[in-house]
Amino acid sequence: QVQLVESGGGLVQVGGSLRLSCAASGRTFSSYAMGWFRQAPGKEREFVTGISGSGGNTAYAESVKGRFTISRDNDKNMVFLQMNSLKPEDTAVYYCAATRGADLIFRYGVNYWGKGTLVTVSS
Image (cartoon, rainbow, N blue to C red; front, side, top):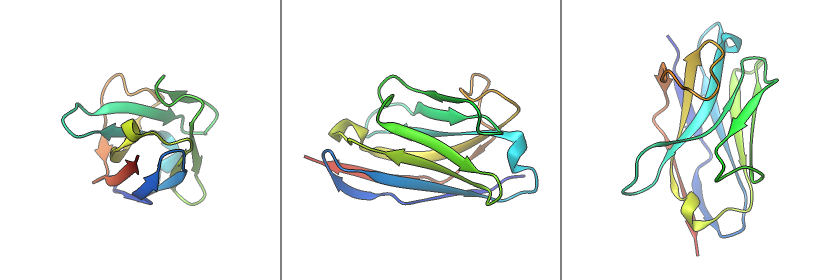
């Protein structure tokens, strides 16, 4: 089993930046594709970004492409989300996610979820 713990959320101004972190437990971190989802108030949870086990491949939702960057450090069992040029519509609870295998866009679901960290972008 894998436990995921997010951190780094907070209140930022429009156009600002924030970096989220996700710390993972377990002995086989590199065997999981990792990603971030978010859920805004009154909306469905949506895919934001994913990264392959090795970190060699990434995928992004169109809404964040060019602004957000996902990365991982397998030596530290961590995944990060660098968020730049933040917009009010980025306000959401952000969840770290892990899936067994290579599906970095989570077409077949999520095996493990973090509890989420709140990002609020003020205008």
